[in-house]
Structures are given as C-alpha cells and as structure tokens.
Image (cartoon, rainbow, N blue to C red; front, side, top):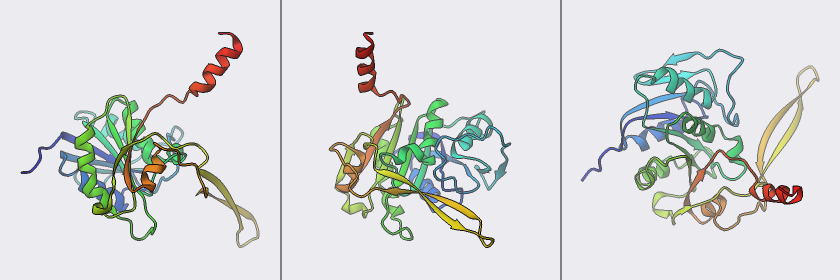
Length: 257
C-alpha cells in the first residue's frame, strides 16, 4: 500500500547548483512526499558560501522549466527569492536543501551553503531539512542511498518546529546502513582552511582556498561524525543560538552577576 503524501508543496534548493546530480536525487527522494515540487537553486556552484546574502548585487531569476528556477545568487538568496517572489502566493510547507555531494558534519556546518539554505527557510518561517550524502569516490556518489532512505526519515520526524534537521547519509549501500542516530554537531577542530599559492603566466601570484579534514579529528560519542563512522544515518537538530553556555556561566561568575 502506497503511503500518503505529507506536503502539498515542497521547495528544493542546494549549493552545488541547479544542474547538480544531487538536486535531481533530492527531487526523486521527495517525490513520494509532496504533491508539488518546486526548485529554486543557484545558477552556478555556491559551495562554501555559508549564509551569505547578495546585498550589493541584483539577483536575476531564470525559468528552467515547470516550477523550476535558477537564481544568480547564493542558497540563502534562492530561498528568499522562492518565499518572497516565486512562491509568495502559495508558500511551501517544507524546504529541502541538498542533496549535497559530501557530508556536512561538525565544522563543515558553518561553511555549508546546503545547511544555510535550510537555515534561511527556517528563519523565514518554513520547516526545513539539510540533506547530504558522504562519499569516498567523488565520481561514484551513492545518491541512491539517500533517495531510498530519506523518505522514511522525513516520515519519522516530520517538519520539526524551531529547528533545522541536518541529515547525513554514510557512504554505504542502503542495505548496509547500520541504523539511525539523533546526534549533536561534532566538536570544532575537524576542519582546516588551507591556502595554496600559484603563479599565473605573467608570474603574478594567485591563491586557492580549500577546506581539508584534519586527520585524527575528535569523534565524541553522540556526535554526527561518530554516527557516520559507525555506518548510521545522522539526524542533527541545528539551532540559531551561538551562545557558549559554559563560557557564559564563567563570565557571569567572574563578573559577580
């Protein structure tokens, strides 16, 4: 027996760009969950832009088929354009951002355009999921794992209030998944920003930035990183409060407040 749809309208976005295979995989995963699927995604790859908004550059909206639009901006721009322009009269019930090519765990969450697209949706009042698929071979990403497993995750947890659900799938076949864990974001220190200097044809220097995962990164029990290492799906609720609670108490104690 076919399970009923959960949503009238679902909005999809990502940070890898509107032509990315992960976005097509997300549409396939969400198809059994929603009556209508709308896509508003970046015209080009926007990986690593975090929550950037294009405040000094006008945005252009390009129709790319039925209920499908490209935006000359970031994932956050795309969600804002979708909710305030494209779908202003018929807003979505849920927003899915992804499926990212590669996991978004621990420090990566802060850089991720995928996560930030979901964050923008939640800030504008729409429940959201960020979805990522880990890989070891970039040319052979197991999109089918996320396609098969995501619907059950969404049916289990629904549109979570007041939070973004950051879902990461390990680089395994669907029948190799060992379970699902509700996790916390991994500790800082798992990622490093590297700078590589090169020279152009005239001898002038230019630079590339790259994110590298540190070897031996901490994997505390209950973290998103630990869950994926065990072969489990990680579902991590993300909030908007960056307050360091432990330091807050120390400062209050030191100040006698």
